Length: 412
Ligand SMILES: C[S@@+](CC[C@H](N)C(=O)[O-])C[C@H]1O[C@@H](n2cnc3c(N)ncnc32)[C@H](O)[C@@H]1O
Image (cartoon, rainbow, N blue to C red; front, side, top):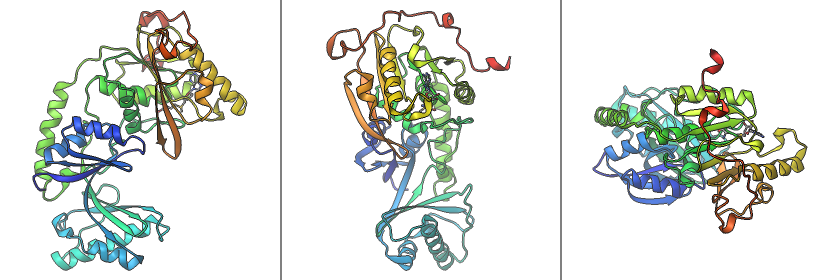
């Protein structure tokens, strides 16, 4: 890898600016937002820092080139023109992952196959033998993206996508992707120095991501990266990452702020408890069975309420009308003096039913669902949100007073 190379980090649509900000903090240069990702320049150690520390990136790609590719033969020829011998050895395993957009081909698997054939044939011609394919755990992951007739080929520095942090041992209905949860926390300007409550926490993704931020824990600390097995760079990457991981472990800090989650569904809460335990954040995160429309007193005089309420008719209260009345009740319950409120909603009826004026808004995709992230200033201090309903009962309380159900309690 040259001194500084061009890389592309992918992210959820609508969060590119947040990723650009994060990459800047991590030392990336010449940052340019693009659709679904951010281009930047980085040296090897800067690139590895991004792999280890980026909370928002889904993949970090090393683009090899963009080619015009029509028909099956066009795909094959384009891929065969790439000097794969610079990136693979006969003993290196590899796999091709393909995605399509507005393409003449209907199966991504077909595109992956053509690229794979081209790699194998080129290696056989140039090096004399071919490397093996390993679709489960390849040393080198080739990413092919075909948009109409344009084929982009890249190598993935990470291998397994970065949202797989390893703590999701028990998913629930509609969990947020870990990287999207981290992007939402950044959008809400959460830094880990403020109390946080998710009153509809589901499997706990927002709380766990907040907990990792509060601990200053590197999100990639407990995984390895494909680049550590690349023929040219693997040994150096391993050494650099070993030092970075040791520094990251040493620099973790104690969490000084309360992080609380509620959910009314015991199964969701059980999943959250297991995930929190897997993330080694049981001491930091408190989970309580409870109804978000009847919040108990919160654990501080100010903080961030951040949540992702149900979008559809899963709460069994009678269609869209039921959802509106649920959102109305949330508007009454969540507007707690001193607390900022941020909500990711996938239901267009949310905003008016919540009956408060947002001070921030952004559109983003949660998987295939168009969502809006809305931010509300703390109520009770006058200003544009003062018309929002307030409740008088939210005095700061001692954590023990609401008898939180800590992780593992059910096992005793
Ligand atoms: C979209 S999911 C949240 C997903 C979560 N962000 C995650 O990553 O797993 C909505 C959650 O709201 C919970 N919920 C619905 N109505 C509730 C209420 N009145 N009080 C508390 N939780 C509620 C559901 O049980 C569900 O777990």
